[in-house]
Image 1 (cartoon, chains in turn orange, blue):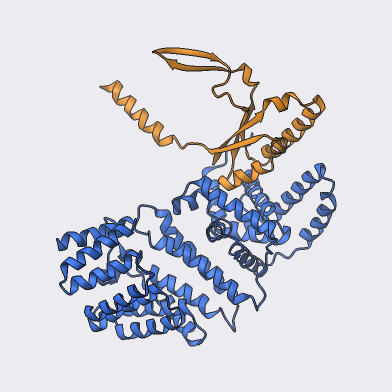
Image 2 (cartoon, each protein chain N blue to C red):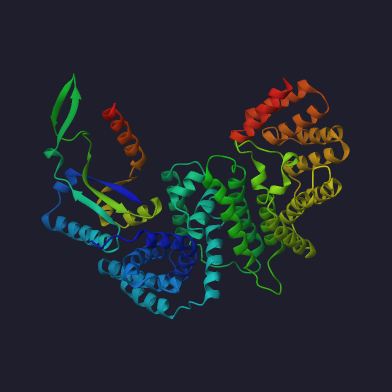
Length: 133
Length: 420
């Protein structure tokens, strides 16, 4: 099963780290990511640029509104996502429990991916019917 | 990226996971002395299987392959940790020698599973933690499957398992079969967990949740495993046989217990030709063996009662006197209100509803069953048979207010409609 792990970090704390502290953290985290890859647990993942680079879209008064910055202004910001291949939720928990990022104060939210196959199939059928009508 | 795994192979590996993961895990726990590390390396061994078996084919003996692959993975994991934590280096050396010298005999592996059951059912863990851990670590069910069966979210169930594992670590709960002097009490705890798993599946077997019916199967599997705890000539503890017999006999009625529409069918109305004769024969043989030991307890007595039902051709042909006698014995060793209630129902079958009602009133006077829907439902049934409709209706209504199980509710509602 696939689990999406949303990694949150404290930007102020991160900005306050020295370069060598940051490098040490990256080395440990990437080493663990390699371990996940080597064992078939890595379903993909990306680090995100800082929250100040975000552009947020929404629908307001019948048109698209754009705002600078992230959707949620919180102390902990989304720093990256990791897609995990695991047997079940507890397996995902065990794998992420060992992720070195945790020891640097980062937080992971683990969510099972939604099973959308049936929903997609039903939707395709509805759309086909619309076309033939 | 490795090439995609052929579907047939990935299905075989999944089947293998179901049958082997419990054994593989338990042996790894013995070798590594650490549940988390054992689990991690087992998952990696299965992942390695998916990667290499498309090329090499499935080995003749997958279990030793998985165990030995997993132990290399475990040593790798320990080495990896040691790179960041010098204190682990000595441990790795120690573990390597221990892991390499360990025995992989089949017999030893069966013992490993038993050791792990006692750990999973340790009284220091919460009851729900014991159940969840047993189903996941011994039966190989996933967090999601167990969560579905117990109608909780996967996140809730995952936490139960995480907490139970933390507790095992913090309380240094050993991975071992308890010493003989401790065994009866600890065995009791294991039997309780197994029966809880069984009842969870059995009481809801009529629901739409197929998974819940699977729980009864898992419980029977665990019961069988426990009978292997003490080999012949002494053989298993009588209560171990008693519990297995009880589960087999109750489960033998599964096909007859519900209608196609999912409605509950009472024992008296069941089509007895649908009962599973093979399971009944096995259950009856186990009951007889347990009774002959003269050291039996409540599970054996309940199984004996179930056996009397199983061997009767109809409700009328049932030896109710013997059932009352068995309940009398059960009352002496386990005088619970529920046993008292069941005895009252059996007395009603022998001596009529009036006698049963007197008994049930006695149970209510002792207190304890006021919130138990079956007590109200049984009382309602006595009133109904005595023609005391108003009192019957009131009791059915009370029972209805006390149960959330859909088949039971439908049954009670039907009874109420009939009386109105």
